[in-house]
Amino acid sequence: MSALRPLVLLGSATLLLAGCADPSQPADASSGSSSGTSSAASPIRKNAALAAKVPAALKASGITIASDVSYPPMDFFASDNKTVVGAEADLDKAIGTVLGVKVTIVNVPFDSILPGLQSGKYQLGVSSFTDTAEREKVVDFVTYFDAGTSLLVPAGNPKALKPGGDSLCGRTVAVAKGSTQALVDLPARAKTCKTPIKASTFPDGTGVNLAVTSGRADAALADSPVAAYAAKQSGGKLEVAGDSYGNAPFGIAVPKNSELTGLLKSALEDLKASGGYEQVLAKWGLQSGALDTFEINAAS
Image (tube, rainbow, N blue to C red; front, side, top):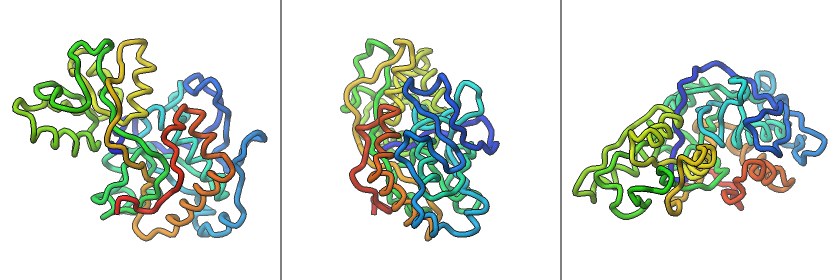
């Protein structure tokens, strides 16, 4: 999508993905395992041919995935504050199942993920990264989801704000640190505003939402699936104004020239063919963001 996800400040402890049922998951959420197995009802299965191509070192150690775990419905903590749930977390597990390898999520501040990949600290970054030409200079991307930016406002939209035009000029708009909304969207808007937009930057999505509900910000700009989920979970305090815009694909971030890049694309294609990909998205109500094809470095 056209926006990047916010970061989380809940620590950087390694979290083994767990599949136990939890109230924070959708009512129809089925459990899954972090160890590469899948439930009897799931179409997600190990692909022996692809699993054979996983480097021996990764088969032994597993794949470490860096993610900002504060971004529902993509990645967030269940009510036990330990279990990672969400659409991206489920996709991580599904890819691990197809490749026959254990996956472990590490909770990392958003703007620390790409440097961590470059240094070799993590093998993958799955954190609603928009695949952009600028980011492709330092990592490679394998696309997996399409989204846009949405405008989140107080219920009733009392100031009649719109996602397009100049209605945000002179307003305080909450955004997440390191997001495309903060780094690209608001600066572009500022060029056409006679009265500047006041960007109110927060370290995580929770802070962005609270800024709007508390009245400290007039509105927020966030990834479309995240904004829709925030409005749904706000108890009637928030709503999405107008339509999303700037749609672009999210990509799994991979260190440059990694042997995992092609395997990830093949694993996603396997999930698409089996129906597992659509199952993951449907579980979280995100079918509209499904991609027909998966690409490597789609921006370039």
